Length: 248
Ligand code: OAD
Image 1 (tube, rainbow, N blue to C red):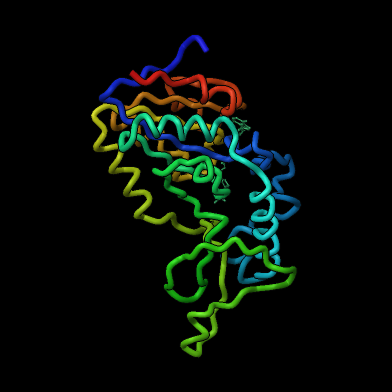
Image 2 (tube, rainbow, N blue to C red; image 1 turned 180 degrees about the horizontal axis):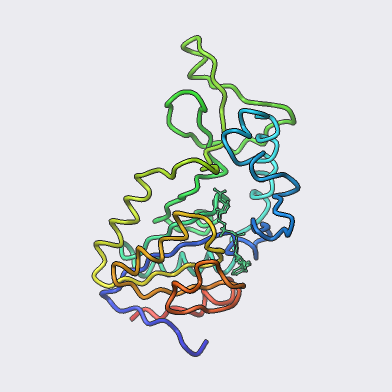
C-alpha cells in the first residue's frame, strides 16, 4: 500500500471493529441480508429483551448456533494485524469491538473492550451475579436456569451476555474508551468493518474528532457515518490492515 499511516511515539491508537472484520473468517455480517433478517430471524425476536421474554428457547437456540459457528472459525489477517499493532504500542493502543465472536482475543489482542458483550459469556436475567464464561451449545428448547437464584430458593433464567436492542452499553466500557481518548496526546481513530449504523459506536468517530483525532475508515462498502471520517480506505480489512501501519 502506498500511503501507509505513520505512527510516531506520541500517537495513541483507538480502533473500533465491526462485523466486517470477522467476515473473512466466515462469520456473516449483520446487514448482509437485504430482507433485514439475521440467519432467518427478525432482529427483535432474537436480540431484544422483549424477544427473550416472549421465547427464551428461540433466543438460546439462535445464540447457541452462533456459539457453535464461532468455535469453528479462526482469526484472519485483520485480527492478527491489530494484535501485532498492540504489541508495538502497548498501553497506547485500545481496541473497542462490536463483535461478540471472541476472535480478537483468540488472535492474542489483550486491550479489548467488547462493547456489545460476548457470545462466550452468560449472565442471569434476574439476579446481579457477574457474567461468567460459558461456551455451552444448549440443546434445542433448553433454557438454562440460574444456579445462584436456585440456591436462594428463587427462580432465575440465564441469558446471553449480549447487549440487545433497547439495552444500554456498560458505562464502564464507555468510560474506558472516553478516558483513552481524553488522555491521548495525539489520537488516531480507526474504524474497520462497520456500517456505522448502530449507536453509540457509530458516534465514536465524532467523539474522537472532538479530541482532535485523525480518523480513518476501512470498509468494503460506504458506511452510514462515512462522511465523518477524514479518510476512507475501501477494501477488505484482512488485506488492508496488515499493510497499513508504520510504527516509528
Ligand atoms: P454490519 O453488518 O452493519 O456492517 C458490516 C460492514 O462491514 C458493512 O458496511 C460491510 O460493507 C463491511 N464489510 C464486509 N466485509 C468486510 C471486510 N472483509 N472488510 C471490511 N469491511 C467489510 O456490522 P456492524 O457495523 O458491526 O449489534 O453492526 C453493528 C451492530 O449491529 C452489531 O454489533 C450488532 C448489530 O446490531 C448487536 O448485536 C448489539
